[in-house]
Length: 324
Image: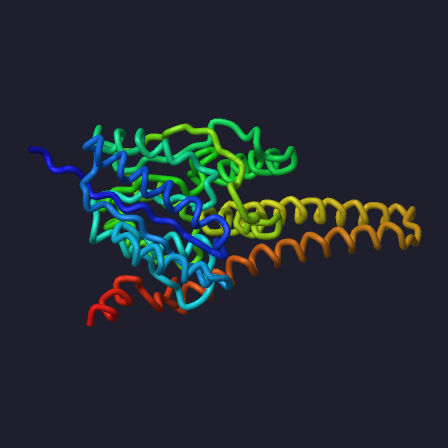
């Protein structure tokens, strides 16, 4: 009899006390359906990653784990961001399962897409990307900026899957290879395509958030977008070089023009042209320094080799303590 793959669903959580009691049973039911359909092993699990929540999210995770052994949880020592929380869950699970599926706990991503994800894995794919088929539930502004974001990333040379966030199936083989990526500045949706292996996409409709509020306001989305560009591509630096060359050529032409006019005796004093040139060059220089500084800052953080996550508690340990 063919061995069924063990699946761990990785769910990052930050201040999700309102939605977690609603979606946790949904994830459990989906695991049970896949087990009954003989697609995954009965010892498959659901791993919640508490990302330093300030509400009672961790208490809810501990209660769920005590009531149902299928639920497990780890707690980070402090809030480290969504990408680090997902990474912590993946690294925790890579030695314990055959496949993982990372998904947010807000109920927006269609959990029924997991059936096709597992099917694609059984057909030989090591990575299966969950891709939104449309963005009708988004506002016009969010839809336009998100689509522009993916186009800019691809234009900058970063290899990303269009309309894919962090809903994906990844095999333990891929995770073993991914463990050799030691970046502190994480942008997972752009890093997994770098690992390689056979991959495909599964398309699904995204829903409205079931409860609670979004933890990704415009400021965080812009920060994630900028991290994605600067973490995966050096093209902005090359663009700065290109701008420098263009401005230098224009400046050289201006110098020749000024000398010719002076020799012809037609030069006149004028502050407007000087101010415009100084402001233009000053703006270009500040922009260039800012982009270069961003890369230097990222290099500085990488050289420190600080841990990307620190796990302070595990529900397994709590259960063992109670038994002892």
